[in-house]
Length: 89
Figure 1 (cartoon, helix red, strand yellow):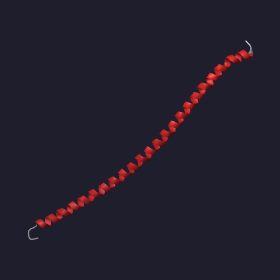
Figure 2 (cartoon, helix red, strand yellow; figure 1 turned 30 degrees about the horizontal axis):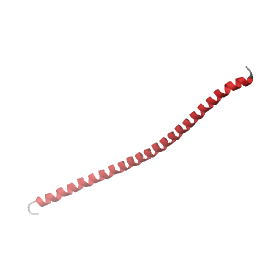
Figure 3 (cartoon, one colour; figure 1 turned 180 degrees about the vertical axis):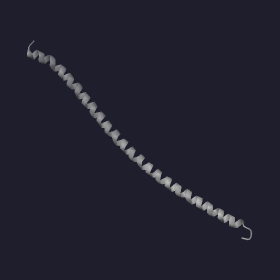
Figure 4 (cartoon, one colour; figure 1 turned 60 degrees about the horizontal axis):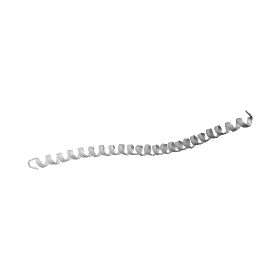
């Protein structure tokens, strides 16, 4: 077999191998883009969750303050009712 004949046999194999490599490269790029989009989305969701958690903590503080004011007001209301119920008042 001559060198030209060997090249003629190898050329289709190399061509096929390069075509497969091109397809895999394209698929890899698609996966890379998808992974980038997923990372961006996950980062945005993480930021949103962090914001919501901070706001929830702030709301818990506000609720605790409201409860304290309510207890104080209940005490004052009890004092007023006691004064109204005393004879001679």
